[in-house]
Figure 1: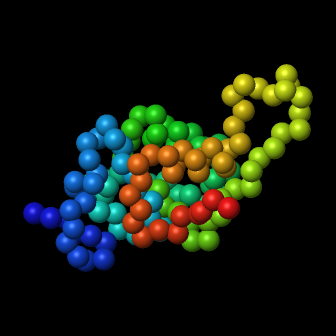
Figure 2: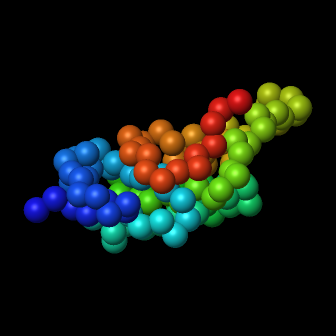
Length: 124
């Protein structure tokens, strides 16, 4: 039987979800209903505040590396972070430096996303 989509129409969300190894995640508005394959998936809020949080980056990175089905909730008005710069000398910068907000958004969008009801930020 087809799954019910968030707008009430029947759809075939199970097929686009694909095998677990693909870790297809969805990017939706906060609180929006996720389709059947993602009903029990973890939800990670992406807001201007959370993008800069090392804990959010850790959660997104973990979901990406473990291929965990994830529902990313993109807050309305979310903007892509400014490109980071670091004025230190090269030898002063740790090799594992992250521009947290940029890394979080890049990883959240780098998995094969199915965009549902979305207010996803666009690159400038």
